[in-house]
Image (cartoon, rainbow over all chains, first blue to last red; front, side):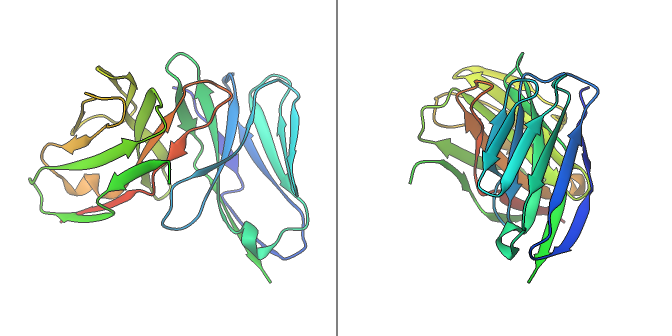
Length: 111
Length: 113
């Protein structure tokens, strides 16, 4: 069974601070996907990283895929209250086209 | 709006009752999945389908049945509800390519008493 470990599990910061969320696995995934989930809603895709070493930027969010395609990170610059939510990483299982999810990082950004 | 539609949004069942959670998508996605989300456990795959007529078990399939008679619909059946099945259930669909993410429904919150 492939497992994804996310850290930290919970993060509470002030508006304007920077933060990084980590997603690690002992297995290689063909891609890593990051989702954001708000209360009462389903996860929404933020980004997919495919190539080892790839870096993608989405406004204040920077996503990186490790060279060995086993780990990924999400960095948020100058966090805002609107960034509050549950951030989930998911590994794509190419044999079945399914996702294996980490347990998530709950981010709370206070004004 | 295009997307994944789940019904009902909330449901309370008594132990032993059966029910079907509905899921429909209008994006012509071949791949569909059912997940359950529990506190501290993350999202776990129950069943998935790679196309009409083809389904397979995920990580936690016991107590659930699925069928895929059309591309659009992928219902999840609880055969005999148990308190351990109290959870939030999400249906998701995708083109199945590693570059393309999954689109999730807004979930069904199920309580079994």
